[in-house]
Image (cartoon, rainbow, N blue to C red; front, side):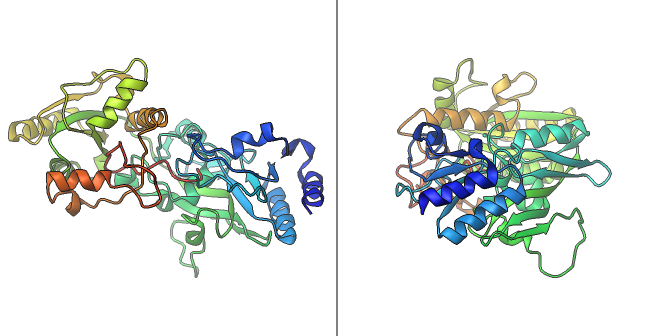
Amino acid sequence: MPDSLIARLVALVGPAQVLTEPADMAPFVTDWRGRYRGAAQCVVRPGNSTEVAAVVKACAEAGVAIVPQGGNTSLCGAATPDDSGGAVVVSLSRLNRILTVDRENSTISVEAGCTLAAVQEAARAADRLFPLALASEGTCQIGGNLSTNAGGVQVLRYGNTRELTLGLEVVLPNGDIWNGLRGLRKDNTGYDLKQLFIGAEGTLGIITGAVLKLFPLPKRLLTCWLNVVSPAAAVDLLNSAKTDFDAQLTAFELVSETALGLVLKHIPDTTRPCEASPWYVLAEFSDAEPAAVEAWLAGRIDSGDVSDGVVAPTLSFTVRKPASIARAASAATSWTPEANRTAFTATRDRLARGDRGDERATRQPHPETEQPSEDGRLGVEDEQPDC
């Protein structure tokens, strides 16, 4: 059966797009951090949704499991096949076309294999913003972002990927193609089926295309790096900033001294922005008046909510944008065996209960992970699995 299936897949997508040699498959069966290694019959790289559908149909008829894979940036092995060697990895990397950018409707239509950075750049070229921003944006793919309902650093203002999605194209488990590529914002026509596939991690189908929302490109960004004594103090600061700036507050990150220490240790040419503190907040304001932000910050320093801080452009490149430090922290933890960024849910009331409880909340390991997190950041979840 394996040989006959591989022969059929070769006929469908071409011999160059079916990888069977161990060395060729190695990057696809190993997770980003090199912690998890699996095996597969082959890796298939279809070039469009029709080929994806044909591959899925062939595997379904052969009774062979499929592991859909985007940029393979998972930190928890979610895009890695098991070690049985029976699965087929379906890589979406060749589905990497920006289909249309509709400036009037503020939408962008893309294939699932587009990197997040490519989507951001295409939007920016049209004077629009695609606000999803992750540490792995240069490598992770939109299909994985959708399949994991990724949040990123600007979820505070724009929501998770689910809130940024208007339409999808999906290959179903039997090989049929469901076409829901619509750019309507007010669509009340029955079931909203796309919601089933967002966050489903490929269990209900393989996302091959999407219509995504765009927003006006901010003309001014202001970033602050602020020292706080605890996560509870950061929550108070967050509420103060939201009260004064509302939607102009577009990112708010809580960073531990441990996470910053890893960045300083492992990332070249990084420097400490200001005096050391147990916790830091990295806040981004879009189209806010600098004088208003500075006045707000002065008030927070006078009240003792903030002990020290610095405002861009005096910040180093590493912390001018929240995604930059997220990327640096991600890379640093990947090189540190004892550090493992884990998924946790810490609501504002939990964080506000007390300093010791706050730290436990941000450092409590997920039941399926091996070690506690070294990265206590509020508002940015882990690298999403299967991105």
